[in-house]
Length: 317
Image (cartoon, rainbow, N blue to C red):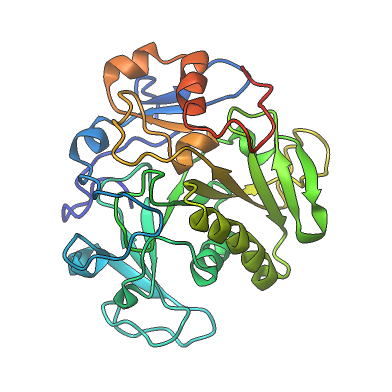
């Protein structure tokens, strides 16, 4: 998934992190350990983002939405506590129905979209059911590099129809092991520090996911109410109060970045700043930008989109 296939469902061809071609992907020298990837076609052929003016913007059936995709883009439905659907194109009933489709403009190998109850035409505002499906997907995957993410409106979500991203990345990211400071440890809430983009972090090893999703969505609902754009990233990670930069990743980190909104803003030439870029994975749009990229220039681009007064300043400069 997420590359070319024989039927042409995936129109873009991507290299894997294990490819030997150094011009395609590599780490950027420096303590942050960014993973930079040349992805020219996505930059050229990605669907034109919809006009967004508010985080609370209503779903518009006249705009592109995932009820309009081709049947060949559908992979299957995922349900929790319900019998499987016999026909992958037929939506099962129930509140936990998640449609999995390919992303025709992939960020990386295996890039899919998780769309909760697509026929309900929900706007791009995170719900407990949507978040729970993302947590389930990461916990059920046997691949440690499978990640899930969410872009709010105003944070480079290009479609106002509720969806999450999922993809594989074989490289470890600093946000998985960077130290955290307890904020409300009784609800597993911490502050992620010593990274270019400080953030809130929730942590779980698979227990009490219903309660965890409620706490996370309480935060994102507050951000929506206050019109604060945000990105979210789910990855396997180290315990927040464990050894600093431990390589062990026994649980999952749910990382939430409040950030500056991008309503009608001009896109960056090298890379946009959304869920994967804040986490340290940088899909680069042009060969020249890929060649010229340095860790300081990447940090400078990312930090232009941060809120300077709501989280501790990063020690990475």
